[in-house]
Length: 499
Image 1 (spheres, helix red, strand yellow):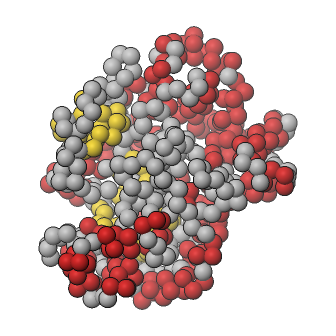
Image 2: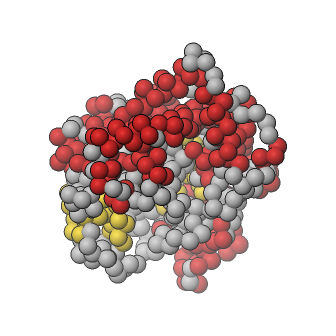
Image 3: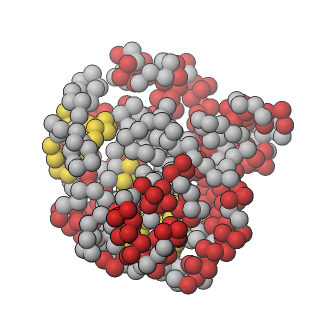
């Protein structure tokens, strides 16, 4: 299916999607910390999703993560996490010879990528692999060169944040950069090759998904991580001190749930400089994401109207203030450069009339979460009877507990409110919540796989505000049975969400 057609048709009919991080796919190289080679499993998952009547797969960001494994604080907003490259795919491509002795080795993935790189370097410069690689490097040059250099230097500097590097590297002095490019030529070349493999396999996965009638729904954080190639290579686009440290950081203000607010720590954009450059950095970022996905969610969309700006010296978010952003000018520039822009606005949380007006002006679908629908009255905007078609409706998101875990955590009174609304008994709430979502007017309903499998809190993806045991959950293939697929195909058919 052509990309442009995919972008235009997602919201022209009722659809059901599944929310599943790439790291939740079962892999042949088990690890409690990282999930290596997950791309190999994507094809089988796509087959199962098609059999369940699902036509949208929503993923979390696919960038290279830091030690906390969060896909929302990546080392680059443009590069891919090469831990996901599939070894079976490398073998099929001819870059990796089958080697059973490696398959049970914990260092298998890294060694296999190195072997593939060695195989590549021994090929003729006129080979198809080299021609594809050089074309990729030329097309990706605006971000790839800086990323590969950043990662090579980071390794050389014992993985220290870039602001702790020697001054000439921290501040990108021309002589120091040129010297590093020469001395680190081989690791830089290897890193570029790994990125080439990542995007090549992902393009094949996307093509395979399209062949099965499934669209890929990506997720893009509004802010980027401070310790990233983005900030190191583009310091003028961020509010930083002369030594590179942040002047202000992002977060959200105090509220009922968090008396100190949330201090995320991401640097704020220097919107004036970005606008003077016609938002070229943002256009580059969105363009790359649209080469990977058919639909793209802008996380923390409200920050395009105004964002909570906290002095970097503050330990909490209490001392912050709202700082306006030129969201309308940015979206105008993006649409001019990238017509038919397929965006979804993550508009959860404290949403003002100005944020709503910005979303409506650009006719962007918003979000609703059923777990948030039962804490007030019949006017709650997330209740199914209050929704509109231009909505992406979730039972829960990657930051929520599973729907079963959420329901079990409620008070007796709150449980009664939920079961009365859903006209369900207490043992059938997750299923009733899913059916209420599918029956709603929302054009796109996205169900976390954990909810589809009726899993409890032990299986949640992430608990905001914590740093342990997040981003580790994965399912096992026997859980995705033919019976489960048939159950959801029947539901999707009844609610006109599949053929």
